[in-house]
Image (cartoon, rainbow, N blue to C red):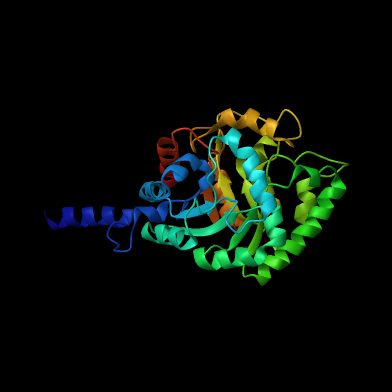
Length: 317
């Protein structure tokens, strides 16, 4: 190679950043870490927890969000779980019959961290110290409420009371070394008595005590725009459930009952296979302060295939 050709080649490589020893193709990706909510593959976890976690790690997932109930959960949560599991086809949750140390060791073996867990209102109200101990063992900081019980969101006054309760829970979580987060579902996005209930919660909770996890699928299904919420409430959302929708669909009603949720399950699809602008949503989420992104495909068929497709798409953004 003569000197002129060498200089031309060097210029091209330099322009691409390939001569820099610190260059990595990963530097150009939108998401540096991609997590998974374990409710995406409960049957595999129940069958062989260690193998399922290893599979997720090999796919490239580096963060996990667990779901309860756990051995330390309030009795009301455990009894409620027993009532619903016959229709789900599995009963495993929390530590899936293992000890907290065994779970911790499995995560460590697979280089996976657990920044967040989902729990329930009873456990948040009654067993925060136990949650704190579990967080110390497993390393999680965020303790999330996945849904407000139906009997506590019948009218706007209920939502105002729940905002007050969230502040109390947030204070309790802080004392235990944790952060309380609320995961929005499909309800609370339609006007009620002249106001949007979710806005009432956002505007009546202490930003230093109450954090939010946006489920972009249920937000869209409720007729709201995820990007607008991220722009309007910067700093409030710390976590996000990343999903996609085959075609634009909204609830048949106010999104307040499980029947309406189940109607929309068939429209949930692998990230990148649907109509949601995930790149725009995730970009705005990062500007707004979202720190953890979890793929969630509720009890998806063939998780070995679907969850791999999702993370491969997200890695490419």
